[in-house]
Length: 112
Length: 117
Image (tube, rainbow over all chains, first blue to last red; front, side, top):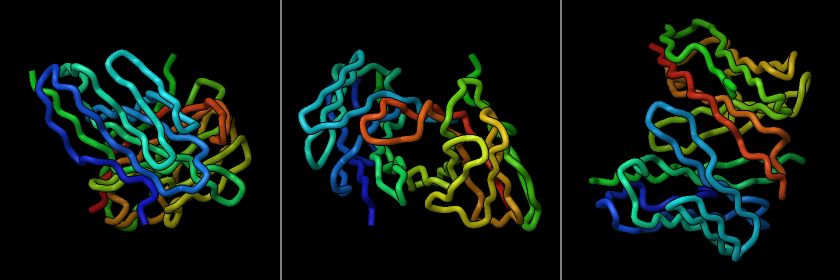
């Protein structure tokens, strides 16, 4: 059973066309939700951490928001350099530790 | 600042061969971990370590061994490679172990692409 589900799997936008990526989770008692960006052939790069429903974080054209069931990554007026796969992860308790559990990602392509 | 360094970048093995994937970090991070990434699947945790001399299993540990003799290094050993271990392997580290309200994100290396024939 997937605990982190990202949608859509793939998204194509025109430059300047704003949109949102979704990350829904089923982990009870969220302890933290993370967004990463991954470029082809590279490791994921950290973007944001969110802890509480209602929390928001911004960085350039990206804004991450969190509710009790899901998180959104809003991309405002995207540019071709925003093309990447965006990964969502939640902290899941496991035997006294917490493990970051990742979704499958959303592949974003921004056309000039 | 090198961050997390993984070697080799590419490797081809035959079924039954063994090898070690290297991971080193120069950030004095306490926590280190290994993930595998397969098409259509999320990153899956193989093993992790919360400090030198301490390791634990993740979600998919079978067929892999780890050790943590120093803070900097966390090698991943494939004991007898199988085609199912064909994947991209990522090492990741963070200042402290993941936990509630610990602002300690993972820093990833650029991966090792492994093919087992």
